[in-house]
Image (tube, rainbow, N blue to C red; front, side, top):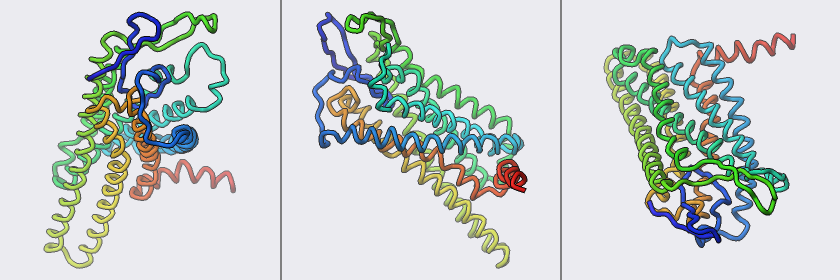
Length: 360
């Protein structure tokens, strides 16, 4: 991974092009001459509309929706492996959207008028942005695992309960949380916060500094992010295709074995499953396509980063992908409510009936 240096009057003061997951900071804003493909002021408008307004709205609604999901899946109990997976996914999405809200607040314009002893955009890098990135990756892999579970359920319906048990599901979900924590940990060894004296402010300020091995750690982090994102992206697509093909094959077999009325019932049920999985797959693929494109650019061209020559392109790519990812994490409640009668029953018991009783 290449990196550039710049000297600001201090001997051997090196600034690196660190490929972080949509972490913007004025720290290295002048590290290289940038090339802009967009009209002047357009990125400021994008920041205000996208990361302040849209981010805040989506994250607040998504936090509420996933809190409801967590309550419902806890009440449904751990007897079903799918409920355990969906509970793990809801917890991850809840944390992801909560950090997304904090990230949005970091871009509010009023921070420019607040006299602090730190830069808010620098502070959010290790405290908000990377944890948010962590929970996003956890959600990706739990979603991939759920799709694999459904593939096994359709392809091997008689063996699925022996293959994927509730205890194994709990272990796999916890294992995903643990492994993803390891994969996002390298940046914490490449940068840290230190206190430095500011002559202009005549006081001590907390600043973000990069260590000497930042370039090597950056390469490792980018490679890990690239591999894991591509794997989950391809995995979700392949599992969706396998599921649809398996359902169609089973439908043909049932057509030869079942009567007309039974066939009609099975066909309707299978169509609902196909629609649900297809919808989840489309949401996943569409929301992560810009993210994959941005990651490809960042991996093979170091200039596509906030500190690189094409930082505007980096900014716009993530400006498209980030809200889509947040939206996908927020709308799962509608998929669960529409497709699961048991979810509707528990939801109505704890969130609708108490309201009706109070009105009476």
